[in-house]
Length: 297
Image (cartoon, rainbow, N blue to C red; front, side, top):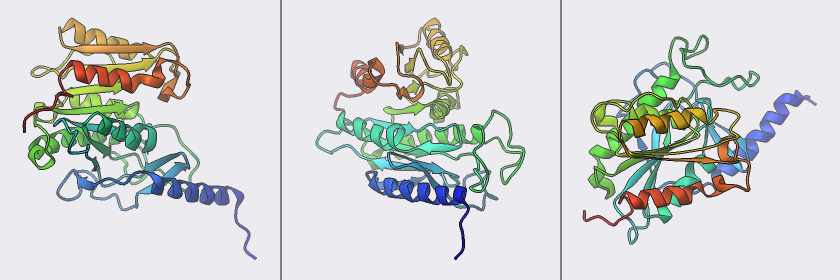
């Protein structure tokens, strides 16, 4: 009988759980590639996308082919607003449940068409021990050596906005009602769209415990209104960057709303405080700004 290494056996068991959990996620109506062919810069990424995580928190890793997963609102309640959802995961993985599909379904309840963004991630060697999250610079080794995957993920966010604006009529939404929400590393993707080229800039955005938030002033041209949420006990990205981001928008007289919850920690994983209901606050903000009013198409 062949004996299996205990570590590899644990990995296989965990992978089986993750695959089962992935199957339990609500399937999208469509999968929409961001680019007509291979994503620029990924031509030499010759490895398969993988599934990771736990039964209640399935994850996507080694994303080579960036796509939007389309979750449309019920047509009777749809308001003509679209929102891209960028999960977090340190640019190494994508938290596809509570920062992805679960959020999409909550947006659907508001009448918003949701598009979960699977942006490109840093290569994770399945045979190597866990590593730290990707930094800001280029990868030093592996199939992505010399490439800054964090920047590439930001470009995927910009392309997602650009694509939805160009094809808004196809999805029954308005081209001036394209928003984006992102979490942690996904929040950094959001900021890449907010500060990026005007054609890939959303009409509104939500940065939730966003990595990379700082006091940089808003870009020239259209300034997307911002919804910002973070917990005061966030031990990963902290709260100061979110506060500084809010201050920069207010200084520029641009619309912004900030929620610093007393507790919640990173990922709003610590329950019992106001962070449990942050999506209710988001819904109020969307309504205040008119994005939940039913628009003529």
